[in-house]
Length: 352
Image (cartoon, rainbow, N blue to C red; front, side, top):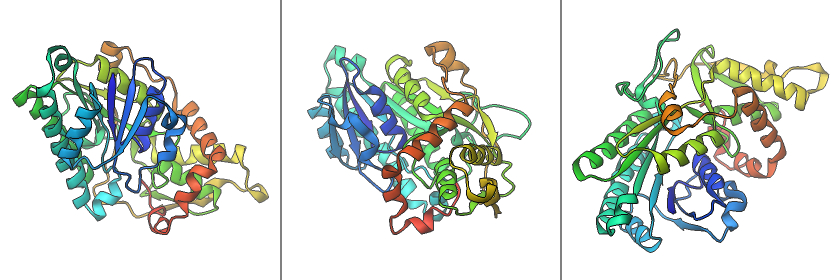
């Protein structure tokens, strides 16, 4: 297999590449524009593999993408390149429209042209895997309900609306043109190499720097949390064993309020890196004005991928968050340059 991963220097994309690296019979081709969230350091040892290639390119450049597909003889596309931060989408939605909608359209056109050129067996084996989010479904009441693959779309933010649009484009290219696609929608990921403006790394790093830890509203919004390495295993199964035209929801069965997440991190840091004067990191928590259109609750039902593809999350939230904190404590050289960038003071004061 020659697998093209778009956005492979990002958080989830790099986890996928690290997971696939060393697989017998697998070549990995990473296509990434290297925007602010793309970090080649996240690839680790995978970047030095003889079975890894990198192309710095924009998915909106369909001619360049088609050249890469042909030159690398791609058999599977895993499309993870996306603008993904909700706060950024509220402040500047244009980039989200361009990357998530126009970019996916351009990528689909390149993939379709390439697929049509393939000989019989290679054409039959080709897959286009679109990786999306549970945020396309909108939100749920606090007390009931879960997202299934049949839940109607009801996006709330420019980010989730752009991802919903890209999902629809992928399905349309399957129905209209026959392109063999699979889709997946995941809950909130966390783990190593997560960009520091997102909730969990922001809390960890603000705490370590004795900065205030901002929490939207009263911290009552609920998310289902998925350890990124569990997600990478799920994505491999979807792209290799998923049924064309089908979608698969991927969740960790680990619902927590935002405040519970923040307090758990504070308590673990109290054990691992105690503050002076017997103070708790919880003392740094500050409640701030809620963001517009803040969804109340996300909850994924992963029964389909569990039943059809045999996937199960291996990490509970307790084990996954402990591993995540330990990674940030041990990998200052990864996150400190990001934290110190000139724009960081503005962005890293926000909550995901």
